[in-house]
Image 1 (cartoon, one colour):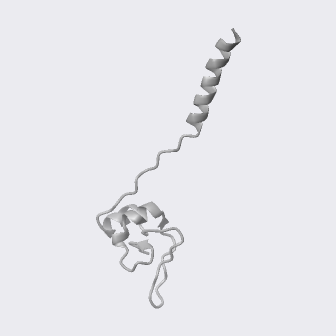
Image 2 (image 1 turned 90 degrees about the horizontal axis):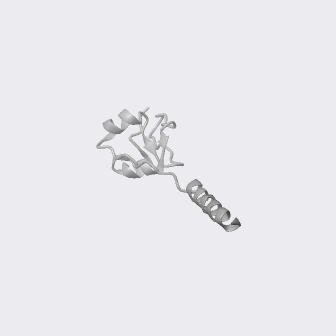
Image 3 (image 1 turned 45 degrees about the vertical axis):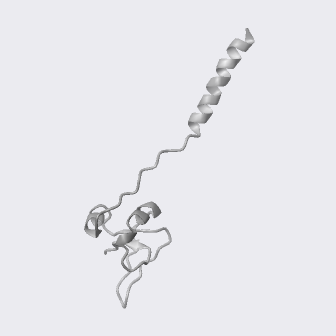
Length: 90
């Protein structure tokens, strides 16, 4: 009689532990057609984590772009100066 109660309880505990540790689904990174389209969604551009905007002269670098490796990797064609920040804009 004890085994009839214990087995279903153990099965429920095992199922709950598998469900609790299941990975969350991640959204796919969007590849934009050009910088105009990217800047509509991300006004200051997108860059890799740890990237620094490369500038010339006394121009102020963009520091508040979105840092997201997946989105940057989907839009590397838009990083003309290859500094790790695509479509940077003040």
